Amino acid sequence: MLRLITDFDGPIIDVSERYYRVYQFCLEKTRRPDQAVQELPKAEFWQLKRSRVPEKQIALNSGLDEPQAQEFAQLRRQTVHTEAYFNYDTLAPGAVDALLKIQQAGIDLAVMTMRRVRELDYAFKKYDLGRFFPENRCYCLSNDYVKTRDIEDKPLLMARALKELPPAADTWMVGDTEADITAAKNYGIKVIAVESGIRDRTQLELYYPDLIVKDFSTAVDLVLEAKHLV
Image (cartoon, rainbow, N blue to C red):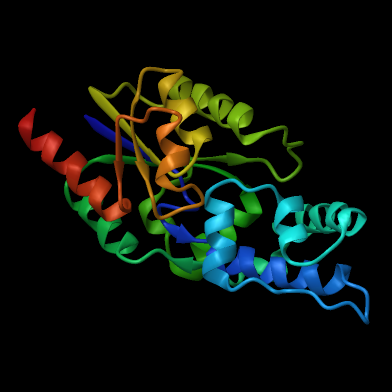
């Protein structure tokens, strides 16, 4: 049996609009009424995020001062995963077609995400994605889980998945961050990094994934090719 474990945000869901709307909200909330700020265009903001420029620096680039930048970063952390903003997420282009291909090919598919149960359920319902992921193939955080850092939390999810899932002859992981790459490499799983998420190629290369491709569709095509070669 061939298994594909995929991250959710990045490969399947485009979070760029949510992150940008939160940025706009935090900038507006933090600035003084008479203060001139420079709201970054979405493309510039998203590139800063993808190259891992810290939140405080993004705030400074936007015209806030040092204390405001601290406040901005804190407000952003409190806001970015709130229900009101999840509505801005969209499906990544081609993601559903790629999921259908996996299903039709009989590949065992699991999702592994730093979303909490309620956050994953929300997206499943909104985009009818539950049909691809049975409950016993969903690995996410409980609603009351106290997060540390993704690069530490995600390998814990991987350990749980490998303990619970039936054996597979071959397993691939698809993700868009260093946490995905680390989780896979810790357990000897082949990992494909996609450039459609919150890290650019330069950042992904630092963690040595097996492959870096444009998006989830391209990753799935590669996994399907590998299946036919076996």
